[in-house]
Length: 419
Image (cartoon, rainbow, N blue to C red; front, top):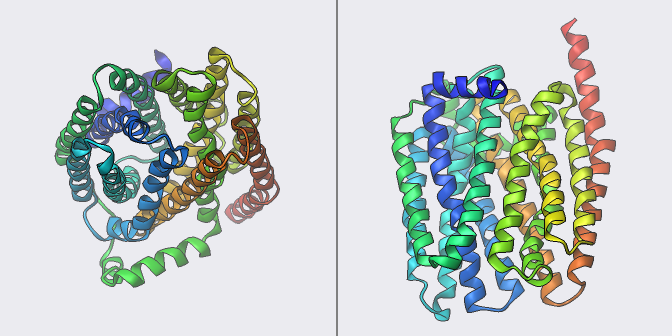
């Protein structure tokens, strides 16, 4: 219990972060609770692996298409109001899944998914850019660990319970809970106070949207200490996205457990992402080594998925999925914290939206390739898992050889300048 004391103290004493966090917990639970229901609709109305993968691709392409404008909006307007409007909008959109009643309306699944992710594209950079405004110092690291930990626990319980609820209660009840969760979360955002640190000159530069977007990209590419952590999520998910998608097929074709098996596998993933950041803070607190640790996390996750591709025993798969995603969870929080600490408030929304753009495009590409490989039987499921796992190992190795070395040089220069 003493290990949880710093996190509980932050939640107890920082009222603004607690409100933002509670909103995140409620909306995330509804979000992940409904994911398997969406998959179930696709499987009920189509036997196409491509159409199943397409709903994931639509999620990420929609998010990516909105990201450049979303980052500008998050720097230009009140971030609290943006989060409030986006959560309410997502609630209304998710409730609209109830209108999908037969195969002729399957197109509506993709349209609603695109709308839901459009709201998310604005919400996420606004939320991540706001956390440094309501926390500071070591509390910023703890706040991100709490956010990631709660996301992971909610992901785990939401996907696990959602899989069972979809099988026992049906998709309609799941969508009602999902949509209601979004709407309820707006109350906590409404009660929060989120300051900002944007001066008059910055606001004047943001009057022109095109100029504001271009200025954001120029800032990122001219500051390589910001660019490096911004590349981490996109690099790992270029292969991991396809691997996580193929867990759906593992449950269906290898384990023969359907939505229940998928719920268990995704729950193991969620637990892993929760544990990884805690281990990083406890055993690898030196932030100068975090960029190197990101490369090691990629190699570790790829190696573990190689073994997952050879197994047929559910409990062994669950253990390996858990351990693999401790590495990916650590990667996520390390890159987020470094970006929050290195980015000025005036550019933070555009920096995080750019990171999300790369992440979503990488994820969409990965899932598209994996789903097409399976659709046209170019490889067996096991062979596809091994291919993507090997790609992730190679990506991690290249990261260590190039990105981590440049980070090390930058740290040495920074230390010499401080003397």
